Length: 88
Image 1 (cartoon, rainbow, N blue to C red):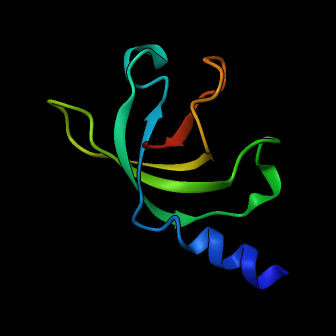
Image 2 (image 1 turned 45 degrees about the horizontal axis):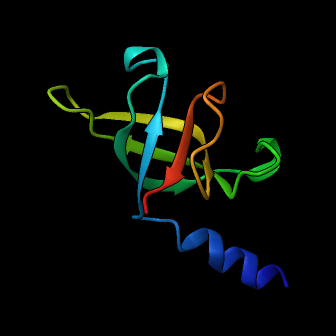
């Protein structure tokens, strides 16, 4: 059972997600990001798939490395920040 969960988490490495953070227009702008590392899931919100480290690529700005971002299957509520969700 734990082997399947570990495989699901490692399959997130390199995945393109959309994320929002207070850094970009106080959370009003979603920017593309690439998952670069998987963090410990102990502090993840209830519906989060995993807690990850991402490299975000905002338009007209340098890329930014952000740690401890929860990833969700779909876009979470606006008050959850920082947050990332799988791009569909």
